Length: 152
Image 1 (cartoon, rainbow, N blue to C red):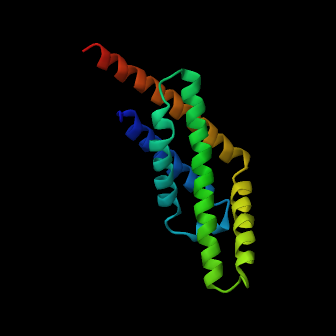
Image 2: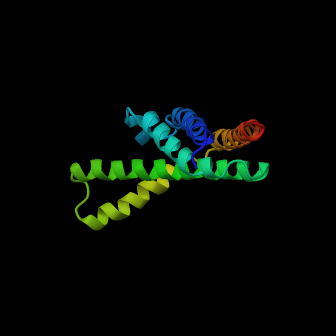
């Protein structure tokens, strides 16, 4: 059953994705090359927020925080995978890959470079604190909405 917590989780994770994309842009040259990097990151994060933590919020407080931290990591991985694929197609159209196997191995090189760039301390603190705050806020909102629903 869909509840109001799913769109709230999507909105919260989308906003965190937008902020994280703007913080990540100066760290990576490939991310600053794209005009729509923040928009795509927010969209992917919102989709992950709808699907992943939206259905798991409200069981226990620690589990809500844990689910939102997992969702932040999943959104970062999905965004990195999408932009690595984009970069492989750009390099393929520029004929910098001679064979399909070069493009395949190049995809994983670019993916790893996207993920390794994100291991900067300040960026990880932003993602970790954002995930904890989202988990706490969504858990409290879910408890308040459930309490109100059950008193009717």
